[in-house]
Length: 385
Image (tube, rainbow, N blue to C red; front, side, top):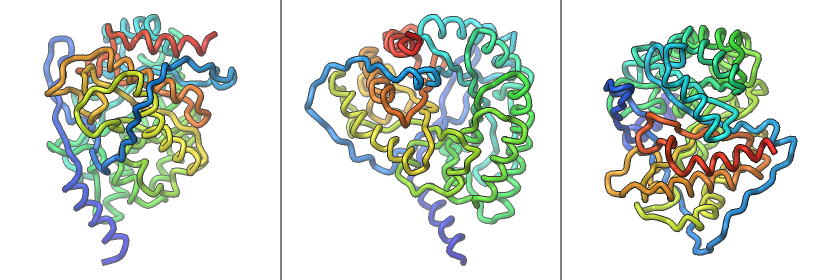
């Protein structure tokens, strides 16, 4: 067995033992369906630095030139074939509400792709995948309202306990077949995104095994393919657990303008409530330091392509879970967690954007109607002053 094959075998075994998965029920307009959640791996165990220091966060004024380009974003994910189109009146109204209540200038449109198993080389679409025409319509509508638009593909796997990071293969041929299939599905979306005026697209999201093990040539080919039809900014969105890994060479490809991170790092090692005044320093010591290190190593700016905090007292514990089974609602803690993220990144020259998950339809992550909106509005509108 070659060293490369042995490395892949070890990764697969570790992933099977260590990764967790879940199924989440979503209610959309009274309808009910389930989808595989992009479960956030709880491993490696993050060494949380606790501090007893209490501070009063103050709004930091960022440089004017940085403010002009900062991606102050929101995610309002939709899961039907008509999502984002003119007939999606819930999303259409949401665009107006998000703008008025948060001051967001960027909107992230997610597109859910899927495959039947972690080893399938065929990538497809389903009933929960927005159509190309609907996505194009959504981009045009958002641009008309003054938004910048970020298109993000998500990968679902139709096997309980698996997710995007679980996708893996044992041969180069299988890997190549998967990348070719993936591109065939993505291509019409990115052609439409270019024509409709999207500003930024991701080439993938949280594909951790492929990210670490698929040859650089396959990734560089994918980047070149996307760049050939879309001339705006390109990103790849890694899962937070990738921050602790050795980064593959393809991430430094000069056609990748920005690296995104799905940020769900736990800030406590037990389901406890933390004094809101202490969360800022916890965020600085346990998240910001890792993000800065990644940006320096790759020589690229970062965006937090997805971040969410539950409306629960234990929101800092295992924040990748969309619901708490043991803690009561705590909108004050949710707002404080959002504020801690914004306090830390707004003056960080390595981080040039953030997208909150999400506006509505995201279970306890929901920000609509919550006190956290005032926090986002304070920070986001400061960019315009």
